[in-house]
Image (tube, rainbow, N blue to C red; front, side, top):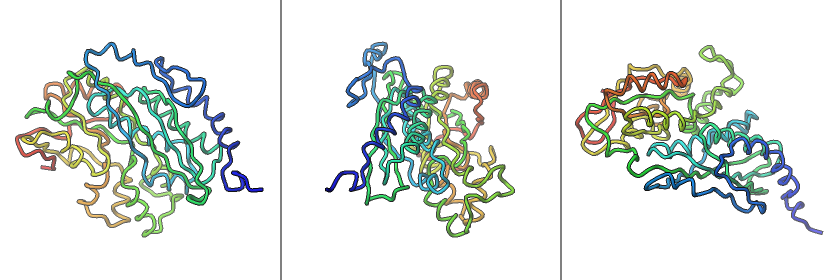
Length: 341
């Protein structure tokens, strides 16, 4: 007799994965979360929004890209979920929105309960770091479409911002300071190029390189820094005008998105030294600087545009929170572009 399990879908394994992840998900709980006994939907008490005069809901959807392929090859699955949260929720904070909750979706060739629990545990930890609740999710088994050790994950997040406090290009002024907030590494963009470099140069993920203090695979799988709480606290404390999340496209392209048409961001490349992983990739891959610039964050994971007189206080606050930051450049008259001077 033909069964669903014979076709490659193990419902009991899925149920065990849910059981294993429950305690990890609970760590991301917010007081507004309402329990739903059926488990078909996540509930969030919207009365929490009554403290806003004109609440604007913000939403974002994203994935982790091909970084998951390195996680699968290296056998490390407990931090890739943090990457997902950073990609989704740190996009929300760019407009000043407080992340409220997130849902995730995992597609895999075979449900291995312990592996799924590790992945979701990372998502839950990322939500905790962002101050958001992991409100629900779905794990789908796709036998035949994906190999038994393959998986992919995506997520969607929702946040809220007071309309009058929304950040963005309209607030940016000539003379503002552009602050660079340090990345934790490569983050979650450019991994198709990373994998190309590994393949063409025959670099092993287990390689121990003089420039690094740990194996190359561990360096490349360092989770994306979650900036949400740091950015929200900074905006409460000083005159922040805009943020730019430095993801695919690099510093110049992403920062340009946060500029009005009549202003430029003049950046100083000498203001920081990119972490060694970027020179390793450039050297082994023979990648030109222009391609490094448009592919990777180069050590800047988030940029903040603040009033010039608030720059020193902003840097002190970020340092007190354990986040390295520096003056990356300044806002000048122009045509809406960020570039190195």
